[in-house]
Amino acid sequence: MPANTDQQTALRIASGRKPFVEPLRLGERLKEIRLANQWTLEDVSQRTGLARSTLSKIENSQISPTFTAVQKLINGLGIDLPQLLTPPRVQPRTMGRRDLTRQGEGQHHPTPTYEHELLSCELAQKRMIPFKTIVRARQFDEFNEWVRHDGEEFLMVLEGEIRLYTEFYEPLQLTRGDSIYFDSDMGHALVSVSEDDAVVLSVCTRGDSAA
Amino acid sequence: MPANTDQQTALRIASGRKPFVEPLRLGERLKEIRLANQWTLEDVSQRTGLARSTLSKIENSQISPTFTAVQKLINGLGIDLPQLLTPPRVQPRTMGRRDLTRQGEGQHHPTPTYEHELLSCELAQKRMIPFKTIVRARQFDEFNEWVRHDGEEFLMVLEGEIRLYTEFYEPLQLTRGDSIYFDSDMGHALVSVSEDDAVVLSVCTRGDSAA
DNA sequence: TTGGCAGGTTCACTATAGGAAACAGAGTTT
DNA sequence: AAACTCTGTTTCCTATAGTGAACCTGCCAA
Image 1 (cartoon, each protein chain N blue to C red):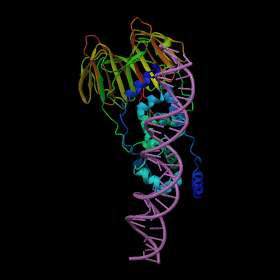
Image 2 (cartoon, rainbow over the protein chains, first blue to last red):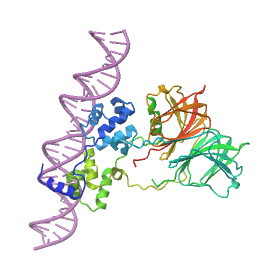
Image 3 (cartoon, chains in turn cyan, purple, blue, brown):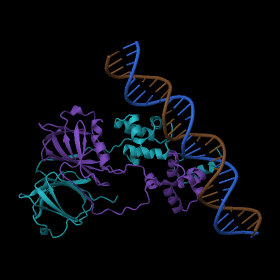
Image 4 (cartoon, chains in turn purple, orange, brown, red):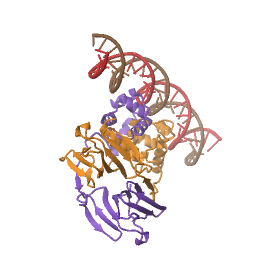
């Protein structure tokens, strides 16, 4: 080894970081993912375009893959890098919370236009907020202003037929089984167009921090 | 394909990933970082242990660095991978996207145990993944192993009746209109207990990057 | 047993990444 | 201007990543 590595080492230590690169369990991790999906090396080869032998060597840490190879892996397997790099250390994150809501047993919040029924409201700290809504409104002008809130919303019509007004689009007519996904900071409002009040299921993302 | 990957597959497809490798602006990005810190190639060489020439070639995309080289980079420069990979592109906070899916017009992914229908799959970059599932399985043992994936899941029974098996609880019987919210890294599996196949609506959180 | 066959590893070879040194250009100093 | 210095690029060579084929090893069917 050439003499000037001493200096490098000195610098590295002085800078207060780990003297050496950790063993990089990438191969191990890849194997885990492969087995978890019950893929053979051949399958992965097909998906990624890398040779079966190459994959074998990567898994057994006989080689350090080129970055283009890593790219092929993450693309072909549909995973992302963090996932590939996350050390195999166990993820103690499995909390296994759950919250059951029987039909009609949610928390009701009636308003003139909507009647919301919050589902799974036992559970705090969740990333989505599901609720069932009975749509009372029949006319757009029953709303004083757009409904809007941070995040995204998914909505499916469970009963009846609705018209969805949105700030940037023409109104959409949705009937039972139809669904839509939209950015909910775009103004929106629902009215029933069926005889009976329509019922929709909505799921909103929790407005957590920026991405 | 084994049962437990169904949902993973669904998630992957839904995430709207680009089919092929982008040109990999890694070199460009590295140069940006280097200049931003007013480092010379020599400086970076000292810090990382990579040769000046190698660094030059990486910056000019003349070579694709080995993964160990990338490791040395992120260690030596004290940056993390996302930082290196994140293209300098700004995130202009999309507004007002929407994606309609008419009844039955989702993207179908049949498997022995479940038949998934991905909803709103036009939209990439969304925080939730909604899909409708016809539950074919009648017996728990039709699953090879628990279905599990990062994040949280909300589920409502649209038709029929199901039994939900989970890793940490006794099985639950759910019928039309019932819903449940749970941590989906807890193993879970659904079977129909009604005559006909049951139909459920699920919404998963997107397994965004590591915490 | 035999003969596939499928999944994985090893081998021999080619392509390419990484390193040392030479080169090239832009200031500085003399 | 020449000589020096600091920067980034290029050259040439060696180490190693990537490949296809050969090679193992169970496993299953005839």
